[in-house]
Length: 149
Image (cartoon, rainbow, N blue to C red; front, side, top):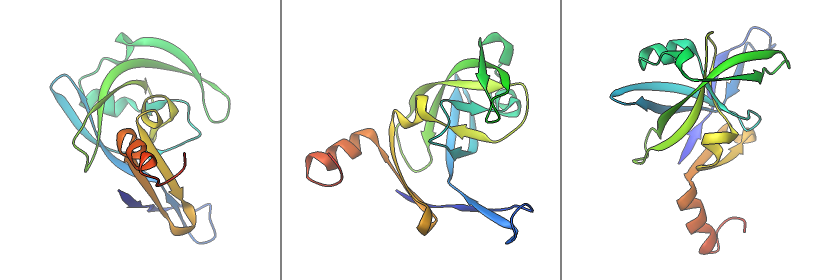
């Protein structure tokens, strides 16, 4: 599936905007489900979500496994790990991941552990788009001679 980058206002740029690989996903824990727009970030080690998403899913953040993480500025951040299920909008299957919930607000992030383990992502920044495939689909194409081996 090919997805266009999202244009967001950015007053730090001379052009007044930036383009980001944002992906529509559904998060689910037990019977609660929430639509989320998340940044696909190959540089992030984990899938990270803000307190507001935990609240919508009726997750008590502090009941999760506590763990200290490094923020992008290398500061230490306290997070709590909870198992949730993720479905990429447009796909039919769900995957279970260990998601980090923070007690603060910020961008939802899909990172290496949990997300990139289940999906192939091909960034085409020059075209302002990215492609996402399930791991099974990517492996099938490789067996048929498409893509990298």
